[in-house]
Image (cartoon, rainbow, N blue to C red):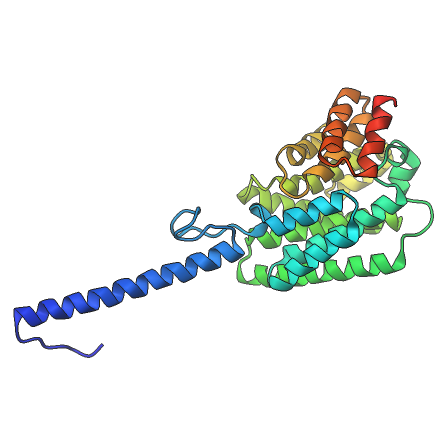
Length: 315
């Protein structure tokens, strides 16, 4: 700014008042723009919103987003096409957020699990099926779309990590992507050895995320499912996995699933059905019955939850 020479006290006061107002208006506009951006992309963690002044805005994976909540509800009601359209619409409006593509991938995986009967007691209580995978092959077009969504998730997440290696939204989305791919390879494609690489990736990114965001309850699902299912393997297989840094623990796995089942934001129902089926394997029928009753009451139109609750209730 050029130097300004003011000849009189009155002129000085006029100059200061005029420029103070300009500065105040500029600062207020900056705050408003920042807060609108935070509300749109981070769920209200802006300077004038719910977050601490100067603190980072929370990503959508850590706040309640009505569109995403609606999409996941449709998913658990087995209205897969409607859920996917909801996720795709949100993803188009937020192309720089990897969680949108992760949700799309989840819709394809959950649909294929449903079609193959994976999330049922018939499958989960059968050691041969649980540890070796489905009979037959998954739908090729659905799997192609699933892997495409995973690729987009990783591309966006890794770009964000190049700017911020601790980006929680990116870490969360990568955890989901690796966990889902491990599940798909192991259960749907029967490529258990190949799935271990992605299982370890999910474990690594989840631990990094939870170290800085311990309240990211949805992230415990990947760890819990991995720890529990690995613990069901035979002794020699578990021994081999330990050399790769992959460990199984039934009790720990169920505790981690319980965290998501209690406090998860988007994956809570998925964790509940997984925990209920694990409880049935462990002869904890009261726990299984309570979880399935809650799912049945929350999603009365879901054939899966209705059928499993009837089975555990002896109907």
